[in-house]
Length: 304
Image (cartoon, rainbow, N blue to C red):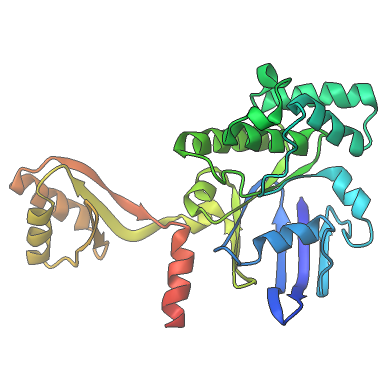
């Protein structure tokens, strides 16, 4: 099912700054990564989908609804987690999320029940009556996620959900987002400049560069196995690299891993034989998978 569709979507700000240019893409349900460097146009795209900004030209549909002319219908089905800290410090998480539920049209009792449920889902049920001002950064991010969930949306738009978190906090947030997408049946758009995070949790990806679509595809297609073998030994990396070059292989070091083009059917056997003859402890020998970051590396190379 297509949940977001754009046709030649363009947004130009005053002063001639173009944030989005001729963006045409169709997004299916699932956990979707929206990636690009800071300033690529990701946040502008999200704000247009929410009806917070009007496009300069082109069209966008969310669940086949125009967010420009039917903003309320879109927001009834979409939850939004903004990037910046926007939480009132002097109210409890329960009060705040209940208030957001009321703004979405829920009756008072239903809003309170939904707020408690949303805070339980994000792991803040026991802390729900504490004032938000006393929360850690990770807890505040969870409150923002809870308020996006409170009206039971069909789609979540998460703008940099791991912003400001330490590694443990980022890992917990990513696990939570993945669970929402997989277990709750809610589609999620994760806007991020951290490509490794997107690659870890998303089903598909939209890559934007300078406001233009770079690629939209399934993550599995973007990270398919390449025609390069990755060889890693626990010790003797330089010794193995020299041996493989003597055998006619082209070897490219990447940290502790040696990258060797898969140029013949017997490449595996010849590399294994070299490792055995050198009596080295083999840690890894498999086909290297592409990474999402290579999309932008290839673009930079092509522009040079």
